[in-house]
Image (cartoon, rainbow, N blue to C red):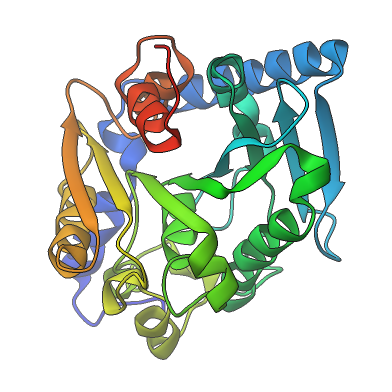
Length: 288
């Protein structure tokens, strides 16, 4: 399912799901983010609070763990974006620089990408990453009673699946909150766009893997955040999830003023940023 019978609709969807078109400097924002990950990684390695572990058979199945001190700490599990076909773990470690000093364990998740991996397989990897974290929490500096799953764009989709029937029960029960940034939760229109040229999801998979077609199994806080300058479909996606989940979780939707799909992430890796305040509240941390 990678084409629309209506060329005008296809062109509209392609534009709506190309967030770089409304961004100031998408490439620059992502490059700067990877540089921040490299700095966070080197700093953590020098301090002895960094380790990388494999959670599955794929080379991409890797967790980078930034734990500021020994013991069990509130844990922030971050899934990068890239329409399930781009990006890497190098996009996810940047937030350790702001979260670890507040007492959190930051975990960046790497996962397989399309077309080498199918979307059902990628969704399963998200649960496998969380399962590994639960099983090895004692040696990873993680408090499994306080795990916040977060994600950006397609990564927000993966994080959202963890609290629905798309994940095993033990994973659903372990998530204490969600921070979903510029996310994709209704996959059916995305399957009609260029995104699906490489992802290759069927109509059935698009419906079956959409978090809007499920509800959280526990009443947890769910923070939906969208940059003001993001395309309208990204706003609709989060509004729809809020509508579907409102009676099953404590859902908050806020627009981040002046931010686009890419530079909105600076609000999470910059002291005083609005997304950092959100993460701190979910993790029940003090500080700014």
